[in-house]
Image 1 (cartoon, rainbow, N blue to C red):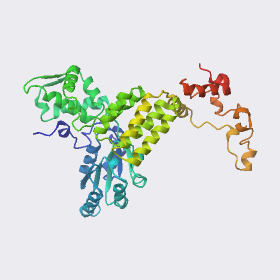
Image 2: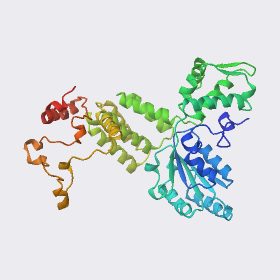
Image 3: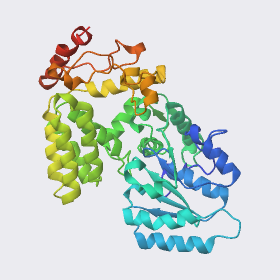
Image 4: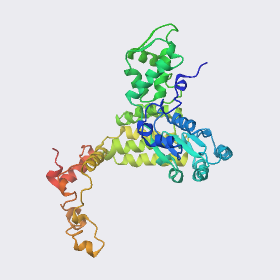
Amino acid sequence: MSEPLAERMRPRSLDDYIGQKHLVGEGAVLRKMIEAGRISSFILWGPPGVGKTTLAQIIAHRLQTPFFTLSAVTSGVKDVREVIEKAKNSRFFNTASPILFIDEVHRFSKNQQDSLLGAVEKGIITLIGATTENPSFEVIRPLLSRCQVYVLKSLEKEDLLQLLDHAIHKDVVLSKREITVQEPAALLRYSGGDARKLLNILELVVESAKPDEEIVITNDLVESQLQQNPLAYDKDGEMHYDIISAFIKSIRGSDPDAALYWMARMIEGGEDPQFIARRLVISAAEDIGLANPNALLLANAAFDAVMKIGWPEGRIPLAEAAVYLATSPKSNSAYLGIDHALEVVRQTGNLPVPLHLRNAPTSLMKDLGYSGGYQYAHDYPGHFVIQQYLPDEMMQQRFWNAQHSPSEEKLYQNMLRCWGDRFKDS
């Protein structure tokens, strides 16, 4: 039985590597390090199927250094120590450190990560970690401080089309077939920027045809094959991003049944409960927001409960939070407000803080007018007094706009009482 298409098409050099030009294109940071023959420890963060493992293998081959691999799912502290000992014995004088590649490094426990620290710090190994999760949350600070983090992006349309063309014309199996891509849209849509998914779908479509039959790939053909084989295009079970997207959108769309269904799919698929809990906290802030501030409290409580009681009982507070969020009124006014403010800040730069709002810890600062004329809100009726809080250039700028859910309407009415016309809807 031949290797899967995705494995046969795995690039062996940077010249064959598709995508991630910001890292490995001409003059890019990783390419320069590789060409110089020396790399420091780093973590590759990005979604599945964008080339994290492949890039690590290319680097090891290019540097001609021993390459060790561990999976965070199946390896323990003992395995880490054994690899470090092998790395010590395999390094020769004045050569690059052996590379230890850890897939799904975010699943390593604190003890496992601690066991790496000394070897990384002393240069016994060069660590390359791969993760689909934000390393800031999942990697201990001492280890993270010794590693550069590089972000890999989902492959763009042009990257996927290039990969498709290479597979059809250069693969030892597919190049013997007569294959025409008449409509690539469905292939691209279902792959979701994941090279492995794209190749798995292509392989599925090709294998469904008769050996001597000409294959004309259309959107209808791809969709019909995936309906008949709903999981075949994702042979490693990596529905991760599709399902979490469906889960969050079900909460946002106020469908508790769908939210529970997609949560069950994640649980049955072995998803990390902390990952689900974090998404609930994000959803509570982004999608429910000021329409029901208690949602964020409940989501945080569910996160804490999962950490305290573990699994499988942790599924219960997660389900409680998911149903509560889905059935709650929705508002994204805070989310829109901060994004608008960030956009304006990037456009306008560092505008000066009005003098009366500045801190004045020294007499010189007071003489310069710092804090002069500031009115302490608690000294006034209703704990409010009209005064300027924004830079001069933004006196009338609005960032937060109420969305008038019952809870948020109270906040809006209070702003109207305080500020009058400034907060009237335009």
